[in-house]
Image (cartoon, rainbow, N blue to C red; front, side, top):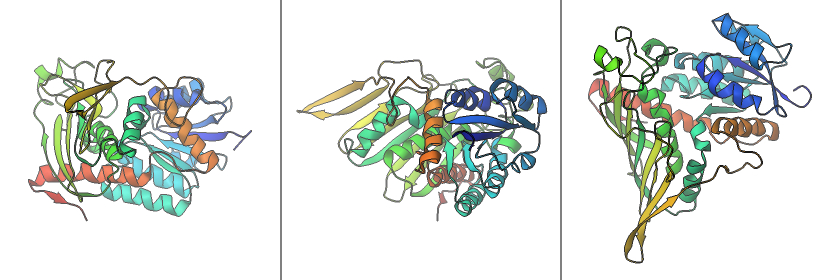
Length: 372
């Protein structure tokens, strides 16, 4: 540390870095300084350093060279999915704390290597699931922990876009991302749902993965982010999974970047328990609604709905209003400084990767995948 502030470095200076990590960390000057930026496209790293770095911030195109700097305390891995594992392992071997963007990895094998490197390093590790920090998500999690829903035995994890294929970066490139909406936005919905249920023991997964609209020019032209190129679109456009847990609980996961379906719902969850149910009606593809969180139950012989509209405060935090990204960053940095556990635990993120891989394999083989 320098002047009591964590020294931050970044591997990857693309969209997620500029839209989430850099501006969020810039809101926390009392906790950190951004001192090193690495990207295979040097111009991106240069621009990041100019806009967010310290006066003496350094720029790299090789993260192995950057990691030799002993002054760096924390590394954020913000690369395409297939690069998460090697960059994270290298950062741990260099003695750095690591936040890796979601998903943890594109395969369970890669995720296990990351876990092994983390445990050997003795450093802090977390994964970028910022949706846990939304006020309504925090409120529902609290209700689940206090037993208000009873035993949660069925859930739906929603990550549905009607037509919103990301047309920037390498999202349609299977060799870089490992997949499409299932691994990209399905990962958020599944993380939220597992966290609410507090259940990280999957038994099996089955599913269907569709490549129906990605290669159609007519579908591409109606994309809200502008038309994608059907000739270079390699990943699925929708996927659906059915997950059975060891205790018998069941989760249905629905994901799409492009699907002829009304009612887009992303980074959202539906929970069904023995005492009550709950639905999160907010999320990145949902118009801002007052009833972001709705509980349903029987009360005095009647069926009731409780519409809860949380304020801007988030558990564990006080003071000025903060976005989900700032909350995530603040909690992460304070976990390092105070030697506490981050909210998103690596073992939890590993299970998300395990399930997503299981759905892809089940769809490919046509057989249910069982986990060890």
